[in-house]
Image (tube, rainbow, N blue to C red):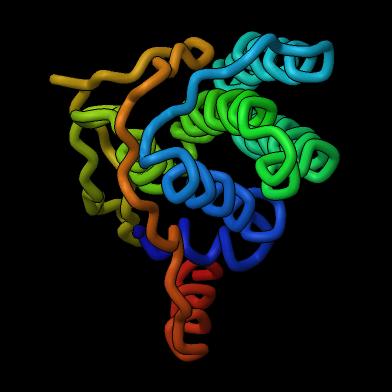
Length: 207
């Protein structure tokens, strides 16, 4: 993962999104034969969460259009926290002991939410989004080919993430994750960094 994204997960994104994302993906992979489970009938709470996330594409999209990147990411994380609360209340790891179909419905809803959140954070966390895209069983590049280019100015140089959208498979829309799609076994989205690496990155950002 790109170093700046790694540091973001360490500073705040980890508690809001990363472990829950991986936990839900790992649970689905291990307990539902490595594929998106078929849900039963969605209840009011299921529908409400999916509707909130779908509505986020308009509000968060407007923030990106206005180049309010921090605010856009904040709104996406607020939706992630909604999903965390949903998981806490539904607790599919307990549901599966009593009713596998009910647990399957919860996992299906959460996977669709994760699929949507992947897209909502992709403009600012593209490498993390691509990893989640792959864990969910998709092929291809979500945003196209990413590369970091160095630009020289009169007094300094800076790096910028650039996109070649040729071949991009992503679209700005809520998840349509198909039942039965084969998942990939998830791995950590971030690695533990040596403190000297973190200090060096902070010095670069401050400079």
